[in-house]
Image (cartoon, rainbow, N blue to C red):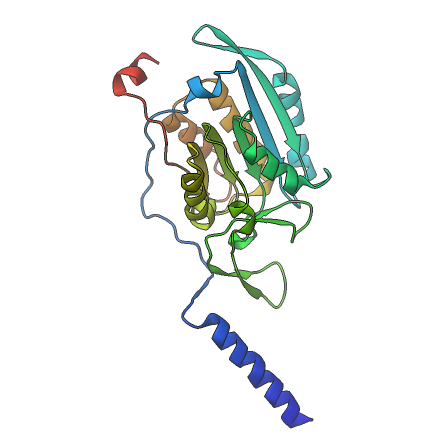
Length: 270
């Protein structure tokens, strides 16, 4: 019996060595040494071309109920209201999806593929780089960079590869939108895979990601601050400044790599 146990352990270790051969488990996400201030502004003309600003907000699995409820008054006030951009009316439409909705992951994918939605926000767990978590811990929209990562939500920790099947199966329309991944270290976990998919679909998307962990208890403040800046037609510099100013436990960085940078003369007029 003892010999059998030794052989079993040896077999498992051998399989582990084969699986991990030539690959390091990523335990700490990479972060840039210095902060970069983005140029330009969102492409408001494209977003408002149909006279609407449609916003879809997704709260991920295990999000604090009080955090989600804190956004209700603002969303109810804004939904259906009109703002004016360069003299033309724009109707605001906000939809919110949480883990209690039926199949929220599928709704998320549908939103990503819907050309009429201008802004998509996910706020929740990054599952250590596995992807967005929705109805439950393992209900993941798989969109990782392909790294071997360590899942610390279970004990003993398990190692798995952050694949991107769900992202690869998502067909982004060739329409300008803003997608915000407000989850821990989304810059390191997801920028590469999402940017690749945008390029494959010829989709002009401004992807907003974060360096350092976010803290769920304060996510509503960052989301509302971001929307307030958008509805004020702010440029990326001020949008980032507003997001980064919400310091809770640790300073965060909003990372923007604009797809649209208007001419300096145009920026000076706005």
